Length: 252
Image (cartoon, rainbow, N blue to C red; front, top):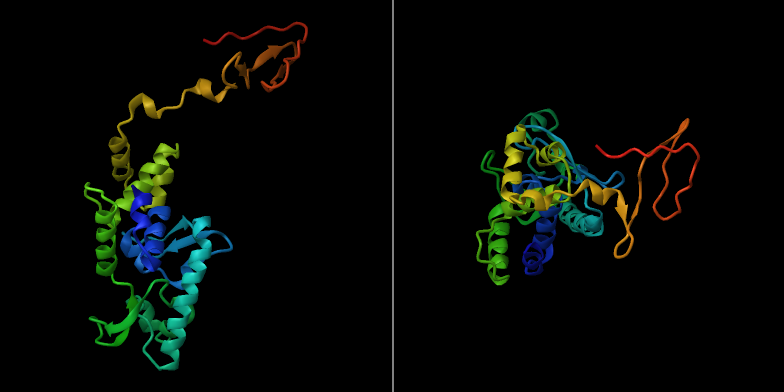
């Protein structure tokens, strides 16, 4: 369903939706990304002052790196245009704007997803370039959901839910998912485990971790056997070496 929705989004809206699904960030966190928050060398994205005023590091999806670089090229064109026209810099957090009033004119602080037009800052009355409007993306997402023929309720925040569910289905531990989502309380993250409701179907048998091969005569990939003076562990694709004085350990 996520793939179908993405297929009906275009341009920046599609890239933004891919980023939300690929990182699990909130829509407000994605909209407020600055150029300096993307670290291509280390493959990370820094979410500044997320919910609860806490910073956290997320993975930068490798598959999105080329598209994000192109997005920065488009953003830089807007930034250069504003500089040439003597426009006001982008808005900054209050404390930072007071301490470094010129920082809003610098490239590192420019928006990754910048609005194409200028508007009046309601806090200061200054006409400047803001990040992409959330309402604009919400409308585009709603149209894509309808065009994809999905009748279940779906909003941009659903992409965050899908991210969490996908990680849990893949076997990531709840604490890792909690950190990536930026939840202060793990009980909030635990909600996703209830949503899965997979029971035994979601659990991988420990036997599957040691048995390899399909069809006839599957062999043990890893089976500890105590020998006199040492433990010999052998892969299943080789014949087991018989060592004298062997005592096999039966499972409890």
